Image (cartoon, rainbow, N blue to C red; front, side, top):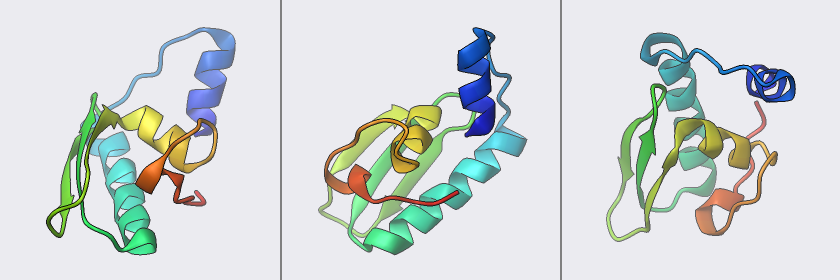
Length: 88
C-alpha cells in the first residue's frame, strides 16, 4: 500500500506484475475471506487481479485489484463485505 500511496503522491504510475503483486493480492484475498467467512464471487481486474470464489449465493464483486486493497486497508470507503478490515 505504501507503493500505491507514494506513486499517487508523486503522480507516477506504478508498475504492477502478476507474479509479484498478484501473489500479494491473492494473500490479501485469502485473509479477507477467512476473516468474514461468508460466500462471495470476486473478480479483481488489472495486472495484479484474479478471480476468487468462496461458497455459493454470495454477492458478485468486481473492482480493480489495487482499489480492493485500498478499501480493505481503509484507505478508501467500502460497503458490505468490503467493510472487513485486513491489516497489511
